[in-house]
Picture 1: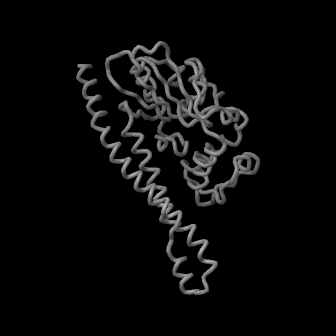
Picture 2: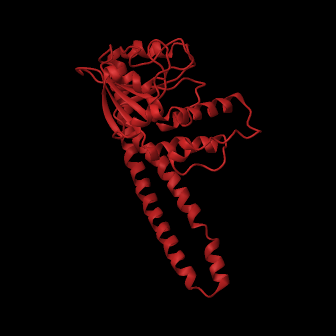
Length: 286
């Protein structure tokens, strides 16, 4: 039976590979168009001051080249995600659930890992950030790899999203501005429990900055031992005390280990923060 599952997984992966080539062609074409649009914008900006014809100048400025370039950039981001997905050599299965509904126990049973790597507990939310657990037959020891934020990426990919989503007005231009200046109050018309929870989650980035700051200063990708994994993926320790805040500076953690059913094939499971947790952008990262 496991051999059949392994074969099916292999077939799915092999069928995805040709799609990578098709996506790459689209990516190349869009990149070419983006470069040409950028050149047009530059040439127009250089040409406009030399024009003495107000009507022609107005007509040129009516052409919204900036929007076209922005649309292409958005599509390139989407294409990049598709390319990454189709070129994977594993079948990734996302697992998400409400707190205390058995998600972590299921993943622990499937992977053979413990609460030290896959957080569980009696609290509301244990998992702080997405982790991808890869089945690696005959791996000597479980190991992790952390993909961390820089100050710039944390600001652009996380903090600014909260400002847009809630909304909180003018977005900070530097992370230090967000940390050192007062946090804008929620607008009066934003009064749902979900939005209040998001606002409280945003405050964590501000209030606990000095507890995760060192992670921002590390290399963007760095290895960790099995014993350190929980410190980067969890919101609390194994006793339930909320003492970890590294997850606020982490994009994702990859874990390699050998699953109990070692012949299951090229599979990876994705442990996502629980339903109802309010980290903006968690699911969109992969």
